[in-house]
Length: 321
Image (cartoon, rainbow, N blue to C red; front, side, top):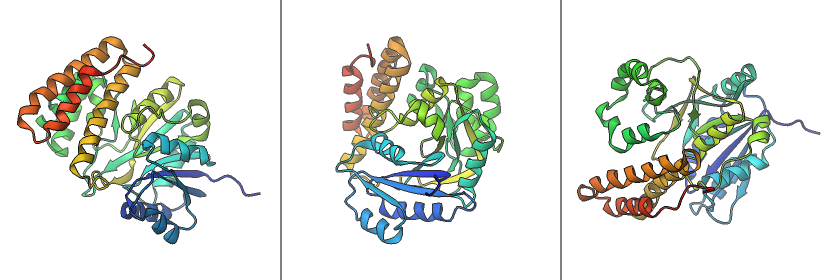
């Protein structure tokens, strides 16, 4: 009888054939990762992904959904089919470095308190992406919705500002800007990105899969809330680098781009409803209305902004209320 693999890599696919093939090539090239099983869960792609993957990577386990059930739902299908000691969520628009899987596995093996870990994500040109974050609260939402990040454009400015802002604001803003400090020292954080997130099978057995009520976005942050609530740590490991081709998988038409934007803010509302209580949830709705009402007259995306405003005005009460 064959032993269980060291790592199960779960990749959700939806019309990202070429990106997925590059991702699979990078996983295949990972050195000294131990035994690895790769599971692709496809959300009813129509771009020939199935044929291309099964032709070029016959060892990959292919699971095809009859319809697009969202990222969380498809991920859960892959997690349930996994048998590895560790389970790696990996976006189809990523490429892992040759030592990535090995370093992530070793970190988990030497840090028993770690329930989930994530690497440093970089753009295609090498710039660092926000790869770890603090759980959102009303203050961070205000900074996000009213364009605080535009005051510090570029990685260099944020790296220079990081120590000062971390000292002044503490954890509230500090975790975001720590992404740009340039330090390769691992540290415990609130959450890491689901674009590349490693969890142990033991933690998965305790916490379960992603919350499928999040169709797309915020499901990784919600998962990290639950992981930490179960008593495990979440760690950012910046010495490990993964290329994340942000936007490359989203060659959307206007209607799809609009739907994605609205879904993003619907998920943020849902996160506040689930984790922040009635008062914060109400104020989050107010800020959304204010922010997108102010932007609406000057934007080409007025239709999408109008939908977000209507969503905030007409959203139901908190989950479980």
